[in-house]
Amino acid sequence: MGPMGTALVTGATAGLGLEFAWQLATARHHLVLVARDEARLEEVARQIHAAAGVDVEVIAADLSVDDDVERVAERLRVDGEDDDDKRRPVGLLVNNAGFGMSQRFIDGDLDLELTGLDLMVRAVLVLSRAAVGQMTHRGRGAILNVGSVAALTASGTYAAHKAWVRSFTEGLASELRGSGVTATVVAPGLTHTEFHARAHADMSGLPEIAWLEAPRVVADALADVRRGVVLSTPSLRYKAASAFLRVAPRGAIRAFGKYR
Image (cartoon, rainbow, N blue to C red; front, top):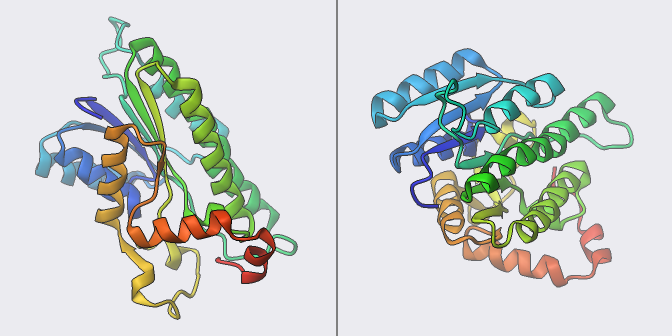
């Protein structure tokens, strides 16, 4: 990843997004932080700037809303060549924003499903396109998309969105070969953040060994970005689980049940 200068992180005020922001700031990257809650964004920006001394821009945006996505895309298109635009080009885009949906598709809230699709699929597509334009023009940069081990399961629309993110990132990485720009998808397993509480998902029955810590997940993902790895799976236990899910009969995976 090297001295990429400026990183833009979506979903930056909580969970993995907040951990990405702190680790990137510690590594001396300037930041552009994107989230819905402007007050929380400003507070996080103030804390990171005070602690790490890096510049922190904020963009309050709901990435399930087309106009808000476009405002973030406009920031990603900055390539540093416009004398009137003093903003630094973004060298690393972290598409992290997302949420879990604790509902069945067939009788759940359709508006919630469409919000999830817009946030975790459409926004990733639009923002990646905006970023790769200026990155390939400059001949350097990286995109890191946050996927999930759930992409290999049959566990509803969240898993389907993450399967799209995985496939999209692999295709993007192939297109970018030789351009100086890389694309990585990180597939965390269960990670201790507020993600599951926000989704109202009861995870109390799962053993502690199933859980990862956010700092480890983020450190592993950023190390893989630096190495140009396309598929990043933090921890040996989830590497093993992913290998099993890739070779197991899909009928068995469907019968295993839902993670939601």
